[in-house]
Length: 426
Image 1 (cartoon, rainbow, N blue to C red):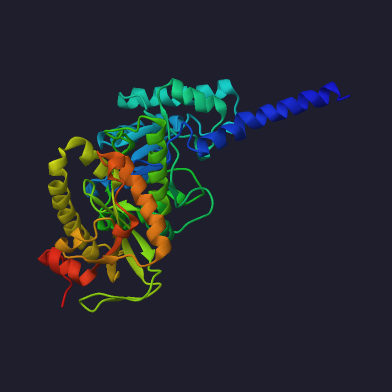
Image 2: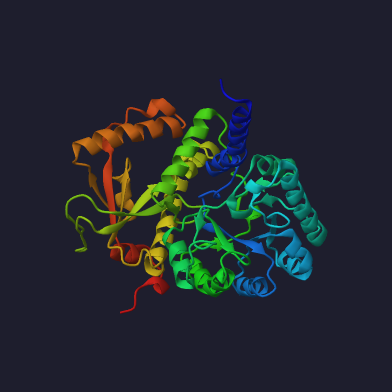
């Protein structure tokens, strides 16, 4: 028979794990929390934790201003009370002010009542100093307990973590390492966690030192820096049924896994970097793509195409899509000329049902010869056609033999779609 004391301790231990680790695992899985924004445009959210700091926060604000970059500051309530003028300066700069608790404790060591008091007190401070109740909550160290998870929702505060972190309390990162890590892992809709206070000694100073270089790089890659209230604007057409939600999750996961990003915010094409795994390809202008070469992989933005089918008469879809493809290729030429990630690519490649039509846009194309690719991609694209096309399954007479490669070299892209300012120096 189990002793009563041992039984009580066991129940308490299980309850404690559920209260702390259980809440953390649920939040980390993205259930009821936000880790990233929509991937439909080139925009990120810079978020700064643990301020306001009397030295580093003003320095960061001064750095952001000339770039017209706006951020989100998750402030600690008691520090805000000591430096109210800094909090007002944050709000005056059209930055977002979020809730990061009143004293910045580790919430796994706080009872439900203590946790609720921490969140409420900080919310009251933010409201008093800015005139706006905080819309976002992030727990210290990103660790929720169940009380924090529930109470933030009661206050109407969205629970926000991050998708990209380059510094923090461990390990210590140099300014150059901070920039390298962010650029290497950059993706549309990224929520980037930084610190203007707290952390390991020296972290805010290194963050402030890295910020100009980071903002230069984000600008070179065509990214906007937006506060969370603008990055997290809901999609105009949210998925409704369970099937649509599953597709939406699949496409977001695909984009994140392969680093896919839109060529332009409102265009028809997206791009990712990959290695060529086929045979040697020789294009008409003499460009050769060898196995293992890095190339740009082009994708149709299926959400964009689907929206066109829903909003336009069928007879106009082709005309509008052609115009948008030309605009996307012009934007791609600008990226190929100016974006460091794409400047060294020899060519851009895609797979499409419409590879014959692509020739009218100056792209080279040809049918797939690999039987397995023809069968598997044929099945996949037939499934997409059934989902996206207004005629649905009536379009399934399209066979896998209609799938082909589409290529355009960097040289041909710049020659046809580049502006004079995009041309490489002779």
